[in-house]
Structures are given as structure tokens and as C-alpha cells.
Image (cartoon, rainbow, N blue to C red; front, side, top):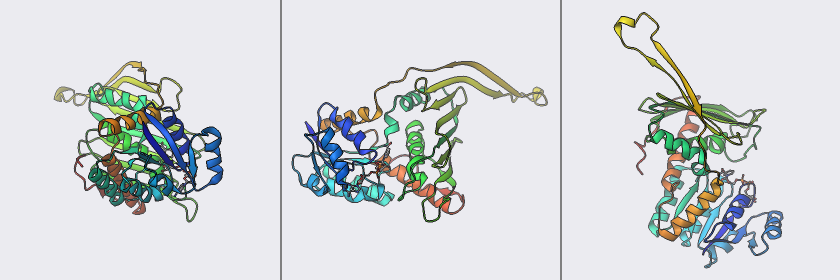
Length: 342
Ligand SMILES: NC(=O)c1ccc[n+]([C@@H]2O[C@H](COP(=O)([O-])OP(=O)(O)OC[C@H]3O[C@@H](n4cnc5c(N)ncnc54)[C@H](O)[C@@H]3O)[C@@H](O)[C@H]2O)c1
């Protein structure tokens, strides 16, 4: 049995506690939060779970094997490093840390101590993203021309991070999962409409050497909630609407072809193809449950998580690059990392 201690019981922490409580092979041993009102909620719902306002009680408890950090991003590094140094396995919320330097330090510490480090990029464990990955990897879509995401709503304004860290982070992890390559450059623009607060709206473009282009429009200031991704391939195209209760993914057999026949060059050179649409069956298990099972399996069998620390570092690097471009009013920022290798 893997005993888990969870730090942070705000908006997201309760989802972790609920899922780990239902995960075979895992037990929620204790929850830490600075706010005693939050801890009362834990006690009412999970009377057997210990609670404390001091995260060090969890770190010092030898019966706890793994720590999950679900606090604001600014504290991920300190709490995660303390957990690893005490020999615990670590689950850390997205984005992994404030800086890629800190993220790399956590990776190094986990590797030195042989501990499992998973970063909660939840979307990678959804049936929808996995299905899109299967479709792209099977080459059914053909060459990926573009990825176009809208992720907007009247969102919870964060005090410590911009909308890029809060929302575009999902697109960065999904793209990392779907595509074999890493972006070569990024250009972003964004704005904070309220002085002294982080940017609440941003448009981010990622450029890939293969010619794929990706764009994400993220905002906490939209009147309606939209969670939609279009992926255009040379053979087929995907529409992914995460708010659809069923049929989240639709695959369209649509596209265009150009003739390079010199005889026809003056004529209409574009051929349009409009075929069928199909909505594939998707796995319906809650993503966090898939992920908590996976975390326990990695600990028990010494496996590397699908969303490991190296992915966490790559995502934080993209947040840094996009933020730097945004502060430079859209100037192109080249990504130093070549490919996805660690
Ligand atoms: N994976 C996802 O899809 C997803 C979704 C939402 C949030 N998150 C991530 O989860 C993390 C938390 O976000 P949230 O929206 O729940 O924040 P929140 O502010 O609602 O909750 C954070 C909680 O942590 C507690 N806390 C802060 N510092 C602490 C400390 N040192 N010791 C103990 N408790 C402490 C606070 O009292 C608060 O209750 C963030 O990293 C966020 O990006 C991930």
C-alpha cells in the first residue's frame, strides 16, 4: 500500500484526495493546508485522514511514501524539493515550478534518489487526447499543418501566475504529447487589463521546423466558456470540443489538394475533398483516476511516468519563452532545446 500525503486542499487538492482515496494500492494518509477551514472539510468527508497546517508533518512522517503538491505554483519548488530530500515520491501540479532551473533541479534530485516524479498534466490522461494521439500516430491525419486552440472563459484570476501559466500550459503539454517534435520558436502577445495583476489574455504562436504551426488563444475574460481545438492534417482534420458531453472528438475527411500540373496552372488548381465525419469512441474513466493508478504503478514497478519531470521542464521552458515574447510585444523567441531529448 502506497501512503500518500497531499499538500494543498483548495480548488484542485480535493480532486486528488478523492481520486487517491479510490485508487487500489493507495491510501490517503494525511492532508496539509494552511487554512483550518479547508482541513475541517477533509475531516468531515474523510474522518480517517490526518490533517495538519504544517506540511513538514507530512514530510517527517516515515509512513508516508509519496507527497502530492497542489498549492500555488510559487511554492511547488520548495515543497517538492523538501519531499524528495525526505525520500518521498513526488506528484506535483502543473505547471511544475516557476522557472525551468527549479524544474530541472527537481528532476535531478528525483533521479539521484531513484524516486518517481510525476507532473500533473491531466489532459494527457484523457480519452480525447489519447485518441487524438492514436489518430496522428497512425498517420490517418497525414502531415499536421496546424493546431488551433481556444481556451477562454470568465476565469479565476490568479494572483501569482499569468494566463499562459494557467491555461496555455495545457496546450503546451498536449502538443508535446501529440507531436514528435518540439517548437523551434514562439511569438506571443498578451495584456493585463488590471494594473498590478498578471496578464489575463494572451495569443501564443508556436513554430515548428517541419512547418507545423500551433496557436493558442487563452483568456480569463470571456463571457462564455470555450475549450476547442482544431487540428488540420493533409488527409483529415479533427475538431475537439472538451465541453461536449459525448462526441468530444470529430474526425472530418475534408481537405484540399493542389495540382502542380503546368497544363492546369492557369485553371482552378485547388481540389476540395469533403467526405464523412466520424466521432470515435473515447475512454470515459476520469483522467485523474487514470493518472493516480499510473502513479502507483510507476512507484510499485519502477516505471517512468508518461508525464515525467522532463516533460514538466519542457513545458516550463515554453512558458518562459512565451512570457518573454509577450513582454517584448510579440518578438520571436527561439527555443534553445533541440528536439525533446532531456
Ligand atoms: N491539473 C489541472 O488541470 C489543474 C487544475 C487546477 C489547478 N491546478 C493546479 O493546482 C495547484 C493549486 O491550484 P488551486 O486552484 O487548487 O489553488 P488554490 O489557491 O485554490 O488552493 C491552494 C491551497 O494550497 C494551500 N496552501 C498554500 N501554501 C501552502 C503550504 N505551504 N502548506 C499547506 N497548504 C498550502 C492554500 O491554503 C490553498 O487552500 C496549482 O499549481 C494549479 O495550477 C491544476
